[in-house]
Image (cartoon, rainbow, N blue to C red):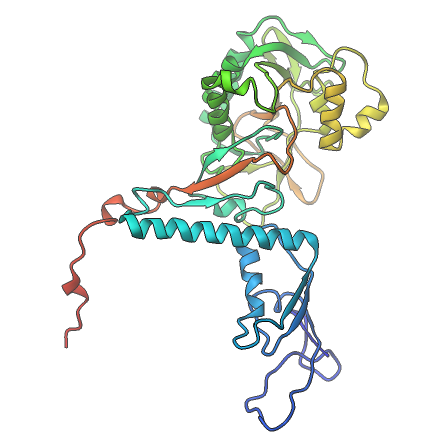
Length: 411
């Protein structure tokens, strides 16, 4: 038995690592080994003579999953004998990975057949219908990704990354003040939050389009992509009346009020307490960007419930997104989209060792958007994304004539 992982040591006092001999005596029978491992076995180490494996490790990122898929190698001559044992989630992930890979190969084949360049027809990569099951890669590697076909029914994105640029932050403050001041009179909720009901989708989209997001936010559910989807719904209103997300056009807009705040924001004729948020301690700080990690608290998404008082049980259940949506449905808000607005104090401090003081150039406006409906296996958050290579490559360098003489051997 061999144990081979990143912490194994080559010592008789510790587990023996898997080491192949320089020469093999073909006249002797090969010994049988049971190999147990973690990092090294799951990242491309091919085991000679492997016939059966129990593979329990997994990941929800497709690029890492593809690395892990290489460990078995190719068994020419005895393809029928090897067996792989996976748990259900790992099996689903590998099944989707193979489908995504095949789809990408078909796209590349279409380029070759039709003489197209990637600049003429952007590369398309299939996304998993269960977004949390498999993501193409980590968010910080998706700089060139642009959502192509998507459905944000049932999702609830929030802004957590902001440009620490005074001009941008102050513009968002003014844009938000203008938006709220242009709405009819608000009503106060049980926590003295300011609530505007029945705000049209057009007004909300107009505000979101004016709101400045961080340019480096390439998440699929970023505000710009949500705007695109909302505009598609507005353009195809007759169609969406019959879809599974319900016929909704009126939003509830809530301005969060921190009742214990010492600093306030005066907006729409009201005095609103600013909320406090700290920034994450990143392993590598990005100049000019503030990452707060989380903006909203679960109970905030119940703040527009006014038909009757929430019970303590409902407030506890709100920590679960599914339960929170059920509670909203119980209070006749199941088909009501919601926009939460937070004014974050630029001088917010923290006592936590894993966090840093905010130190923003100006107060920050944070947004939480909740779309009605439920995300299930039949609903796609993102069907596919396209890679916008024009952000990285000069179009003039693609598709031009090639002078083959430049590549000929001088001899």
